[in-house]
Image (cartoon, rainbow, N blue to C red; front, side, top):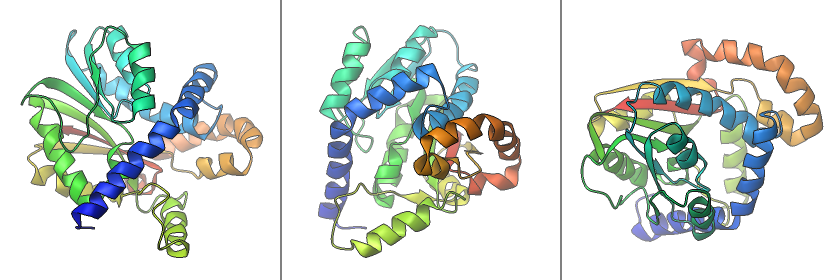
Length: 264
């Protein structure tokens, strides 16, 4: 997708979608606080959070953290509670309003990943969870360059993308939907990648290294879509097996979430 108008349409649709979904995200995080097995969102997001917590342990107290696409401000809140200096960037008005209310002392402003409104080398650690997946490939490349630009030398980017060959079959499902509604862009775009492709993109914009991890090997999200009640019962039983498989390198391209930790 190279036409600038189409790129703008993709960005705009993603922002409008998240503006409309703000209340749902609030509810999801509230449910997640009660149990990580509450729904598909909380189960998958918990897996990402475990890796994020590990990465944040390497940061010095007071490290400058930026959450790009901070949504309702949950990670800004957590980072500040851990003793960091966290800021947020969020283009969706309703999401940003919740984030500001949740983090009255933090800097949370409007902006997009492709044009970060910060000076070079402003942050030690940048979080970008479930954001770039909504952009087309050209915008992803531009955003990665921007994410590197605002990092200090040796700084860390914590990024998630969607694996093209995840065993949950999302790529096939998404492709079929687009085929059946080929003239419609009412659903947000999803950019699928492989770890090799993402690694190539990161190095092309100047990142020195990248470690890729997969979480959600089994089709747990599909099970949640079929029956949330059943999934809540089954997930605690299958979780140790799923987690063990995700520690094996060959499983990374097949997992539901692709988590990447890159160094500037």
